[in-house]
Image (cartoon, rainbow, N blue to C red; front, side, top):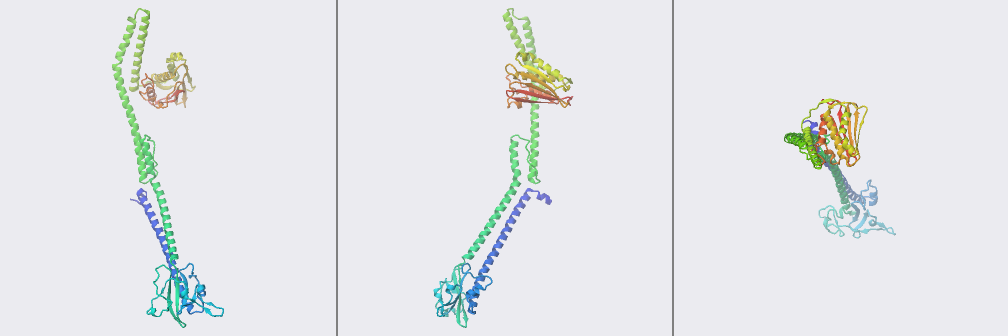
Length: 504
């Protein structure tokens, strides 16, 4: 596999990120620990130098005319500090226990008024446990009385250490007084705490960086989760961003392709459902036409024969007889019309294209409802654009479309009054537009998306095929039909027809 292909891999980049974070953490931790060790070593060296400086001062003071404090002030680096350093005091004591010199002025020799020297006894100086710095052979037999045996101090605790020197003035003892090692311990603790603090900051930083990268790497998973819920809800238009080149990007691309295929499958399924529904309607229409139309024709002819040959002589009975016969013929005609609607919707269209004047067809449609509209106080009118072209269409089918729409408008107007208007206009000279407008009760929002579906009707006596036939006829002409309605304010059906449909 090529290097670029490996770097584009989600797993490889995640492993590389973890390796970089681990290496960075170890490297910084190693650097911090190394600096802490160097700092600790420096502190220990300074403590050792201070002890050695104290011993050297004591020895020099014996063979020099200067006192310890003068010698200390001559040091380039002030290693000896009785307040903060490990060496608290350095003293020179003779065999009689008299302090000949001391870094602390309170214990140093002083001059009396008679010019004599007054010494401080070592036994008057508060000292921690005193022990020998170096064990010499037979040293305990020659020790002065002021040196008493004591247990050596524990590591880190205050202590005083002596070692003898033979001089021309007799034996002298250099005593180095050490304070507690708490100062060094505190320094080491502070450095350890600082190291732990830096380590914690590093871990927080690496955790934050890792979290940011992981959030960026796994963001497509969230998109896929959201997309899955939308697809499950039926929204096949949603797409997942597929901008990356790794496995996540490939997964997003595959998911989008799957969604597109599901959308196409759903569309084909809907078309198949419509085709199956049309096939069922076709078989039903054929059965109805065969089984019902013949008896209907016989009933219709029989009613005509009864009305002409068996009408009663009594005028009142004759009027009732004629009224009932007329009602029966109207019901037979209504059943026959429903059968015709079934046949129109289920059978393939056979269109006879010819030049059609839309205004003439609209006037014929309004003429069919003219009497009923006048009876209910409904005004009908036609508005025509001067540039309205003649179109190529099937005249009978187009007249059926107009008739269905104006009858629907008439039935939608409850009570007296109202308007039905047919507007005819042109769109760029290539399409004709027909708007059928009524001021009826309108269509409910939950019903407006279903009005063109077959067998869906809000009327008690409707078959639900009128608007389905309208849509089928318009689409057969290569046009479109849409509806806009506001409940209580009327409805507008808009038909767009090409001047020369391709199917012609």
